[in-house]
Image (spheres, rainbow, N blue to C red):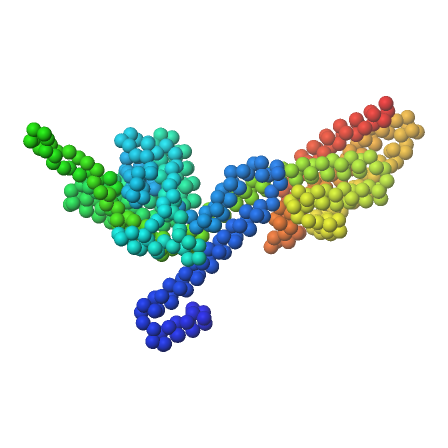
Length: 489
């Protein structure tokens, strides 16, 4: 406990406050903390939505994920609490929601699978004589909470795998889960309940259709569910018995004086469920909405980031390959050693600047040169090898080039061979530099805790040098032969 809390407790308990005042003081503290949590979640999500940093090409493949984030932001701004009902076909999910609403909004019927898609209804809470506690639904500083009830398809309907995936997706989005059964729990229901529990959301298990059981049987089923079936998943406080659409038998006298028994729809028995929902929302309020929204937003954001980075990596590899071939061709065609090395460095810097623009990380030419130096130093052996190879091969290439007129073009073939080898070696180093730069920029211009040396070493160890060199040589050979054919013509 920090000093501020200790001072507050001392003041409360030593200034003659009564229990009601103490409870009110702690409620005020909780409300302030809840408000802070809500505002922080709203600020974080708004900042995320406004700073996605996506190019038009990247947005083209991420419309659904972006829409999800915008929807979540709207949910926070409007203080929406979402409650979803799950269960097997025929357990009365829609009837339960209609009973809570006090009107038939969700479609019900005798046929299995009436709820074909996800329906939702906004529940406007008003104070009445039966439920004065409804006022506890008000979110301080925002206004009345908007409650949205969501009815989902049966978990055992046709195309079960798709509907299970849908159930998991909805469970991640909502703030409170209602799971409806109408008797002892089946294996399918237990598995579904276990999966939904993994979402980490508040949950109420609803034992519906209790009007269809004698009192003794009803209590026996309830106790079996509570003490055996879901003991490891739910506490007794999270289990509620209801009769959402009870049928009442009534004697009606016919015109001829005979009595006839008729069944009619009775008054729903869902008071305990309503109070339980109100209790959860009052207890957790804004924090519940903020936490659940941010948890789901994190997941959606991860999908956005993964997709964005995949697109950028593909584009980055194209930039690197283009830089590799430009450098390889330039080195292969240039007979002067000093110019070779300078040209290669200029091309590497240009490639680094192109990659920085691709990853939307501002970088000056001086910064690119500094990054190139850092990577070259970390590369160590390959840079030294490149220098020696380029120096030696450039000298040999120069001699062969000068002797071509004297030899009548005989030395042209070995000249091309040396030029291709020199270009491939230079292209290989450029490829490694490009991959190191891509890794650095993809990590938001950071080498991470390991530092550049360790990162570059891992990259070099992962490269298939033979395959890369062969690919460069093959493409370079085609380009050089085309170049010399054009010159001869």
